[in-house]
Image (cartoon, rainbow, N blue to C red; front, side, top):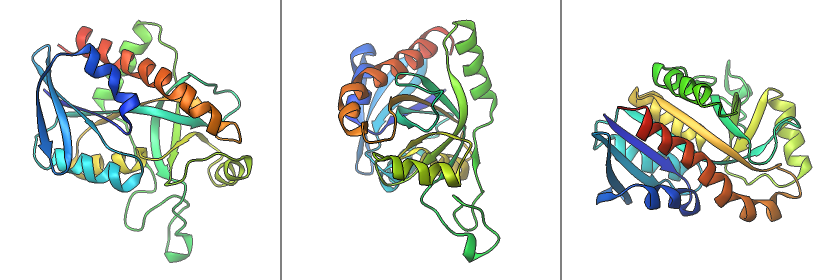
Length: 232
């Protein structure tokens, strides 16, 4: 299999580089991907950059040039639920855009890009297999809707506005729906794993730098264990 692992920030990717032995590096468009071999699977690790355009552009560069069988998207997110705390793992089941407001443009719902699905569903056999791994190893996680936008959410007012439009959302970040949109159009399964780095309120600025490496490592440790132990 050919598997992509794509993360927004270097701080979230550094654990993979120290864990796997890189065979070489390849440029796809403007993005450099490290190439690893794990259990006879080709792994491509790359940084998407931050935000929706960077995420879509850099994943598209890879998928247009390599016949990728599975995408792992990982990194951090802010919590939108009081029951979800810092360092918790979230396995998104859906993505949509919290900053897409197109209900007056036609028969669209909040978060929907015109002529696109209302939400990007991540149902796939690959995701089910990953869930089986998490449960077999007693790795705690929560599922639900993650919403994406081009703003770092760091105030209660921002958070309340998102929760008003998306009361079922469990987390917020800046790339996931763009990854999901690209994966949808390439018909490639996407497994997303986000770790909570902050609460999406006024404490987010001080929390983020402290927790992003720690939660990025937590998510990376789960994925590398899966690739080494299960994906034969």
